[in-house]
Image: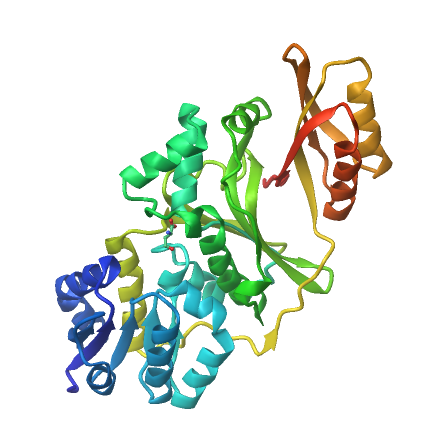
Amino acid sequence: MSADTCTIGLLGHGTVGSAFADLVAARADDITRITGRRPQIGGILTRSLGDADAILAGSDIVVELMGGVETARDLVLRALRSGTPVVTANKQLVSRHGPELAQAAREGGVALRYEAAVAGIVPVVRVLGESLAGAQVDRVHGIVNGTTNFILSQMAATGATYADALREAQELGYAEADPTEDVSGADAAAKMAILARLAFGHWVHLDDVVFEGIEHVTADDMAYARQFDLALKLVGTAERVGDGLSVRVHPAFLPVGHPLASVDGPFNAVTIESAAITEITLSGPGAGGPQTASAVLGDVVSAMIGAPGPPEPHAPAVIGSGVASAFYVHLEVADRPGVLAQVAERLGLQGISVKSVIQDGLGETARLVIVTHTVSEQDFAAALDLIRALDVVRAVRAIRVIDEHFS
Ligand code: HSE
């Protein structure tokens, strides 16, 4: 360590870690001009190489890109407590251990930064934590998983089935051999927990986030979406509900004019709504070695110039109930007179108003596809139970519709 250099201890040397090491070398001259110190990688810890104790002791900044939770947690806590600033891209660590990490950072008098943990290079952590600190945020919607957005975009563009689009995502390297973390919504849930913390100033644990994945989306749903002028995305939502917060991830239809509806392929985007500012949308590559490494290096520069880290809340979130949504309902029914009336009556009993209906005869059976106006999720679930109990109904599935327009 010297006054002219900034020694970076790099924990992890996979796709992002090696891209980060390359980027530090490539950008060192410019960063020296910005910060007055030359960044250099001092030591690298991999699964089989490197001495963690020596790296922690000899670093001005620690960059954690190893993934996993327990080892990363131990090393990050030790670095913070001993007064070394830490930059991480580890969404699991940040979404599970926020208060403990913040306490360690306070003890060491340094900051933990995690811009790359959410939406890759899209600078949403900074925007929520700093630029929008003056606006009361009401809601955040995000497409925060590139793999699922690629799969859904391919299904919409080509009529492919979920299985075929997933296979293509794997062949192109977007999806892992085991895609569960992405397609189940779990990856997006961790990112939404972090965004909710920044948007509302309360700790939101990953376990507070309800999530559903895209595994059950069909090519039919995509075809009907086109007829209703809707786009189907895996959407994370964090919003105020009564005196609490609701943070959730699920497939949702968006009106084609919604800022997130046109975000296709492996891109990420986040829409932040506030009565004071209407909405802003940030979008860009949400993954990839060089892109994520760039977000990490941005955090390193912030640490080098001594900028404050993201604001940390002091109180846990109260998880609210009473979420409202519009719904798309897809029913396979017997093709007989009066069936549509029976279904409409069950919706009406729960005060649910129908916005549009498409009916297709298929011979013995018919398909009814209904889009409702916004209703309480509880009332909708009760109506769905009544509809499922009808003997003319063979299959039902429902997907939420985010019925918001901005002007
Ligand atoms: N697997 C994630 C995605 C990127 O597909 O967006 C890392 O969080």
